[in-house]
Image (cartoon, rainbow, N blue to C red; front, side):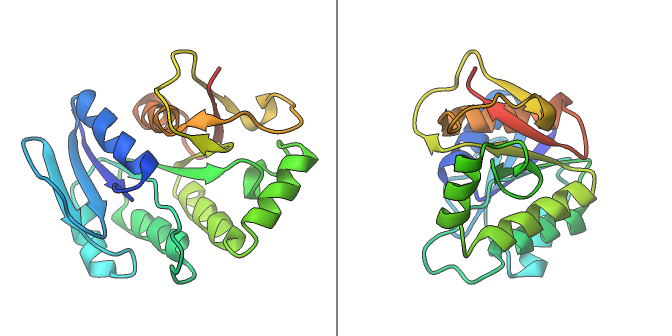
Length: 202
């Protein structure tokens, strides 16, 4: 059992990470802007990524940090990069973050349509996403890139592949938040370090 800290615990992927990490037997620290329920093996902490001291305190003592931060309407620039830098400063044994297929390191592995759509949809956020990926990879962490996400159960046929093994498609297949969370936990528990993986439902 490890102590696992989840950044962005109130989001769709973050909530799944908290649930699945708990089910796998880990002690969980759920970090979000607003604290929620706390119980045995689960501690909820309210902290903002722009408050370096609060984030450092929340992450202290966690062997694994899972960064599932997302952007909300009205968020100031740099939220994702600030979160990633907080993870780097905490220096956990393992760090895994979620990113978008077709951005930064995975741009060459995605088809042109995916790259075009992602660039248009994430136009303002793209530098922040790339900056966050760079920070996590620079500390030897793992970045899990995914296609469009949806609700649904964890895929029993899920797998994660390196960039050179990403299937060529006109547009990436959708993947459930639960499957993304499972892929991130798999990577944290026994995946490669310092690499970008692409999570797939099958």
